[in-house]
Amino acid sequence: MKALALTLALVVAAAGMHADSHAQDGKSPSDLTVLIPSKTWSAAAVPRSPSEVADAWSGAIDGIAWWVNLYGEQAVRKQIDVLLRESVADARKLIEWTGDGALVEVRLIERSHPDSPFKAVGILGDRLWLAGTGTRPEDALYDYWSRPSLRPGVPDSWSVHPLGETYFWIKLEGDKPVIAAVERGLARDLDARLRDDFGRYAADHARRSWNARTRWENVAVATKKRLADTFARKAVDSAMLEIRASQERVAKADAELQRALQRERRAASALQTVRLLQGVLTVVQLAQEVRTIIDEPLPQLSNASTAAAVINVTETVYKDSTVQKATMMATFSGSLADLQKYLNLLGAQAAKAGAPASVNQSLQIPKPQ
Image (cartoon, rainbow, N blue to C red; front, side, top):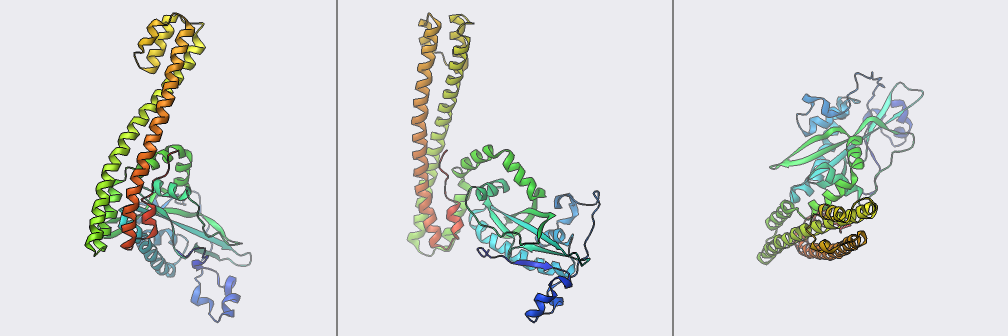
């Protein structure tokens, strides 16, 4: 996609709206425009998304052609074919390296004129907008939202069509790119799902980034196919051996960190409970409550003869759990840095083999929060 380029691809307009501008550059309006009468939809007739039309998806080209043809004419579909093929080709350059899918968006914009019964309808941008790649649409959209990016803005006097913004998901099946609307179709649906559960998606995205063995293997295979130098091919194999071993260390450190986090949470809960109930429960009951919440025998509680002593033991366990958590967080962060080092070696070889810059980006692990 051309950076910062703002073009109206496939703009179909009333002849009266752009006749003057086309006359100035010597082109007839009929060369560049198609007349489209404005349509009034009844509430029952408006499809909420392409996914509601079961028989509309016979393939990549027909799918988006149908979506746009809700508002356009036959002449528009021919141009849609060109645009879609170019956009799928762009996405394919990325996903054929990683085996991931690519999230693209179609934004239809419209413009009315008070003196014309016709409406101009177009697609914003010189390609379908490529949000990013990932194992699923939510991952690709989260990745896009988490990094700075620039997108073309809607031009003055134009607006986004109320049904004209939707996401499509491109995957490779063998050598063939296959495209379909994401679940429920419209862009606002996927946006809402991600916003409503952003914390879970963020944690899930991070965990997937350090468990992405399939992606790493795909990058390694694609890289070796394109490298003629034997030494470089061996370097890829060496990097993959280190990556597999390092990823196992990450998984082990992560499991230990999760146990440390759970212990700290339980200890904090136990401490809060005994402080609240020290005047309500007996010493024996308080001690048993702490053992139950922390889920440990805690033999030191056997010598506690007062509520203050129970609280003191609980505080000691809590402080110990915070130290343990900090130690495991440092270990886990170190294991991620180790894994990233070997992923960078793989990325360097992929770059030598001609991989797009986004392939190296897909090998990056976000820092733990």
